Length: 325
View 1 (cartoon, rainbow, N blue to C red):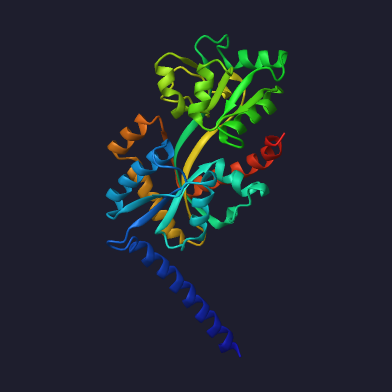
View 2: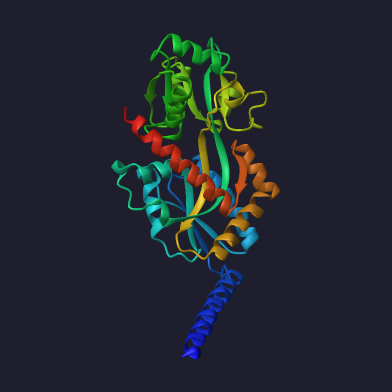
């Protein structure tokens, strides 16, 4: 009787050891020689998201010694590609770009009818942060965030601020600004950063909410002034521009771009891919190319990026109802 229980224990222990050994062997042989990896990008070729992904893919090829093919699957604000990632075989050969808060909005807003949920993904790594900014024309009376906030308190819903679309990162940033400061703005939704910037320069709106990568050329030409950066630290691309937090408003915003694999991928393989990304982002040519795009590298490993995912889940859940008002 006693021997039966002991035998069960031995069998279970042996199976556990076999699983651990198999996972370790799988990581050591990943990727298989000559087998390409597919990186899905849910946005059109040519944008900063796509360009950053292609730069990373080139660096990863040097580290892994195999092809990393970037495949664009644009549509539905990234949902087509996100669906493909979630439904892919969890073997490490298919993963893709994810942009926060966009993907979290699609997951948590029932009206988006996403074919995936948060638990269908395994976060791999954070690549870059394209921090949010609030900008005005160079001739604007606003010199600081406080100037704009004070005027908004005196004139509710009179100051017009752009977004690049409903429920985008820019939109959520303005909603956060309203919540933190008790102000109300006239929010104007545009179809992309280009049309929003044109409206600002054409004096159709008072302020522009976007990302650092979208304002560098106009800033260099002297056409605009950036009032603040929506990050914990000042941007190397905007010397002298204070963060919102340093100006009394604890606002974090922008586009946090990282990579996801389908849930169920062995952790050892997820870590292998994540480590290859880390090493690729340390290559001199990769760093230089990212800097030209105004993209600030901020690598986070599997654990760190997973933590960011959880934080954004809480944030987006609270802001989605406000985005419909």
